[in-house]
Amino acid sequence: MFLGEFQHSIDDKGRIIIPAKFREALGTDFIVTRGLDSCLFVYPRHEWAQLEQKIKSLPSMAANARAFSRLLFSGASECEWDKQGRVNVPNHLRDYAKLDKECTVIGVSSRVEIWDKATWEEYSRQSADSFNEIAEKLVDFDFNF
View 1 (cartoon, helix red, strand yellow):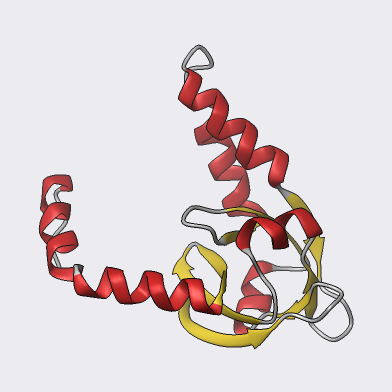
View 2: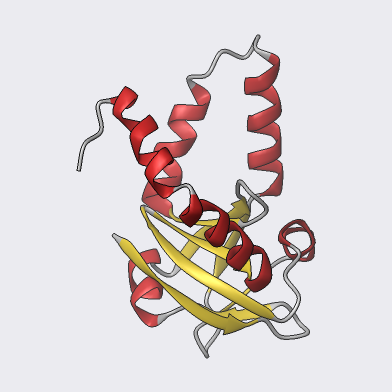
């Protein structure tokens, strides 16, 4: 399980250090793709395979399903660590997430997310302001904590 929030920098070549405990759980090779809310999703291979199966089960006649599948898979990149424990984020993904220098790396249960630091701070602030509201809406999904 991926947990926590970490601050890191991305260098001019697009390399970012991922926390050691995340690297171990991600394995030697993993998938980086477009995420939601202008971040990147990073999946271990086994989680990616499960997600792939779920997406394959979507109705191909539904325009939204096709669009989601196309955007997710066309943006995906197989990645591995360099000797310093960094991942080289492809240009198209850096552009998508607006990654420039300062980044926030967060653990979200089954995946890691990479955010531009300012974008994460704004998203986090807005979400924190409505945390109670969000929790109340999750009751509709039979979710209690």
